[in-house]
Image (cartoon, rainbow, N blue to C red):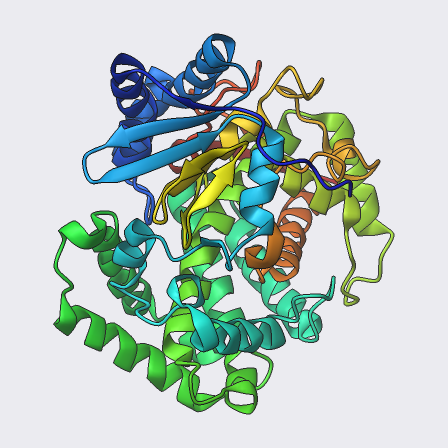
Length: 441
């Protein structure tokens, strides 16, 4: 990848533009829930089209100020929003030395359920916890060492989900998804532990308020005790079975595993959205089915076409719309200094739907992830980028792609919810997706 140059222009936007940006972009993002989505609010904001507001507003600011680094002066805080890929690459490339992922807001949010998570750790603690996570999740490998038992779990749960079914809605899919996740992460003994996820959901709901909501220590202790009991089983064939052999003194595996469970929630939304896209794009669906059919049933496969479809779903509807970094030192941007502690906010939907950069911005184009177009565009950030890129990228892609491919292999899906996918909307609310299903032979 070609290294991009440093920032060319820094602009402090007007008070009116600051208020408009906060109102039309910031408030809807916060209202939806940055740590756990609020389904009713997501549905309401989808109908209002607030994700399109984000893209439209940033385009307006680009037309007014150029492809600049926008600076907002807020009470007790300086915020910088890059509109140019050069600046995005610098911020993500120089993480964590210059731009820390452990932003104040993120630390306040995640500490409710993962007080020592790698994303909010620094120094030697971060190094240890990142190393632990990468070793357990097999970060560099396309297929995890436990891909065989993972695939068996996915086949079993998808078969149960779709057996004798003519309709499928989000609640039924979500129940099956969490059974898959609990078995993959913690083992078969956790399959039906819905209370674990309910406790996590409660803590994540508190996390939506970041440092404004006091930590409910009793709830966190209950969650941690329940999670520790599953980890202590070290069940073979699960990620929990690998934890003890990799753990180091600084690791705090409870926090790291809590983060994995948290991340799999967004992955489930992406899986449901991908099924909806395949249901409305028969040419891609046919390729996904062919890819799945050509492999051995019990043999884990890279499923590159299906993975590309998943990545394209994440481009269209990123599950992390705002990537936050706090500068750890004063930074210089074309001779314009920004103080230590400046919060940099990369708004992924703006770049993912940028019609000036992407000729496929508002279409479902999985081939962009197969022919090099996406790889040559550093502002496509389905799993972030740089040294803090998501260490679970390959694992999550495998689980989503295998689940999607298994679901559509022998079942036809028709979207019957009110949401229209033609043209592709700026928001696709997963919580109100509904399908009819028919056997496919």
